[in-house]
Length: 87
Image 1: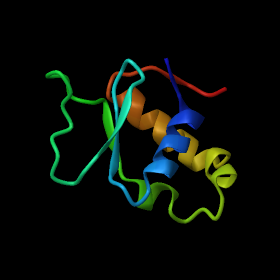
Image 2: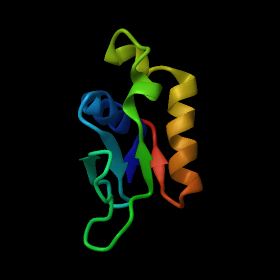
Image 3: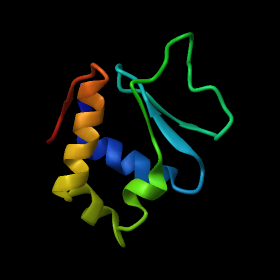
Image 4: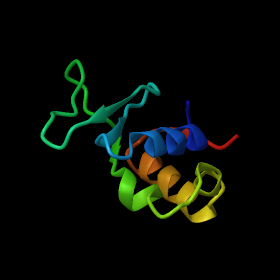
């Protein structure tokens, strides 16, 4: 099962490198702007753009404890058919 705060941490780490693709099995990958996000023929549940999501937070802890951001990540994953939880 996916974990919200772990995804936010990975989004944070992807800043400046590309977008973060997240698959239902919990795997993630940084995807360059023109790169295909499919892996082994499977499309990701979601692709997150780091700068709009976490670029405004001065520290990672602020992002991982922001109620609006937590809910946004969870809603995106659930609407795509995935399961996610907070720790």
